[in-house]
Image (cartoon, rainbow, N blue to C red; front, side, top):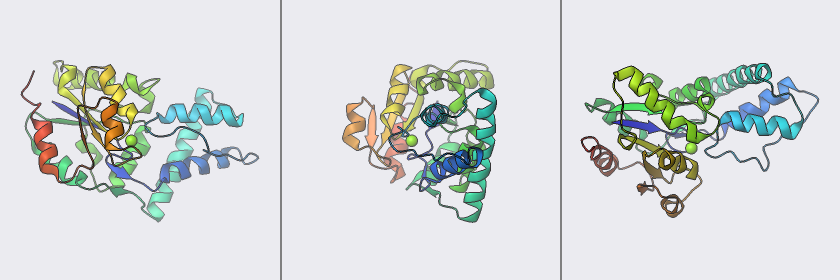
Length: 232
Ligand SMILES: [Mg+2]
């Protein structure tokens, strides 16, 4: 079984540290312009798509080389910001749930997130979790949209274990309709958690197999997740 965690709004909250660091990076690279995220859809979206929309809105280059420079600049700003003042907080139950799952035989953990790899790992570390607990990951650059990410994670699972995993034995945990959509589109299971901007009802209406208002207490969440370990 593979349990794939979204990061922002699911594992942790960062008081928008990522958005602030992205803005700082845009301003550093293009000091003659002013940048704003007003009206830009962020929740559950790949950072690569957010970058594309921001560059097109503000009329700055978005070629691959410029994107690489932006990514490195953004990572530097986020690193400095979190080193000065760590605004990342692990959500209720997350640390215990991740550690409990990591101890379970037959359970592999991963990240399935719109973050870039470096900034995603940075946020996870500042939430008090070892990013290396997550062995099978899919990040922003692994696809064009979030729907592309679950097959990448499944392919990495296969490479690591030498045998394929049925999509229904991969469970995605996320806080937005996009997390639910990417799971259902690929035949994966999905646990919605209403610790982001969306309610239990909204996530249930999107078709999540199970929805909780938060991941604490971890007992019932763990029971639900592990009930899928042996089923085929
Ligand atoms: Mg999220």
